[in-house]
Length: 250
Image 1 (spheres, rainbow, N blue to C red):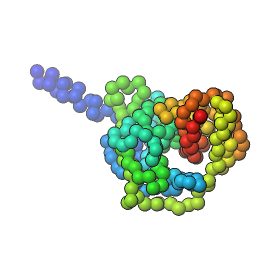
Image 2 (cartoon, rainbow, N blue to C red):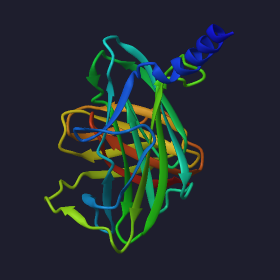
Image 3 (cartoon, helix red, strand yellow):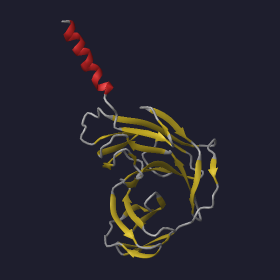
Image 4 (cartoon, rainbow, N blue to C red):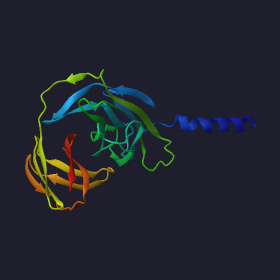
């Protein structure tokens, strides 16, 4: 009977003793599981004639702490905050990037014992348009249905009167114009990257077009046709969103 009780106790302890595969970092500092923190300071991301976009960078990094390549999933879950993106919107990158205030799950293979350079999460707000959003990020093995091996961190992004500008470095102003040609779109652009990705989203957050734009200046006629409605056009390089613009098809 005593042996049975010992074995039972050990079986209950084994899951908690299991080595973890992932670790979230804030800069170079590892974070405990279920860590929570708030981001309220910002940098000016880019400026247009009639508005300025601010970025609230979480500073989160993600590391595979094992000696094996791992098929990895990362989930973004909004706990509190707006579901619209009128005053601010999330950016969620894991191998590629998506924007918008929606729950997301993205997957890819993380190399052994390395930080994933394709992972970044932050919040963009429009200057003077105060907003707050609380987001939970979870990382786990893709095939681990019960998420027995996962790490969780929660970030609250706050833009209010107490938010502070942390950098005033001059920001390159990308030129980006959308022209309607019937039911097709033509993009005129200038940016400071060698290559750039163009993405079009509808207001439900669904990506309806994606293309690579060559060089840092030119025009591009999208082959897709678009129904009437409001869309969001996003330009991004291999690290971050360069600029966004909302437009309508009439």
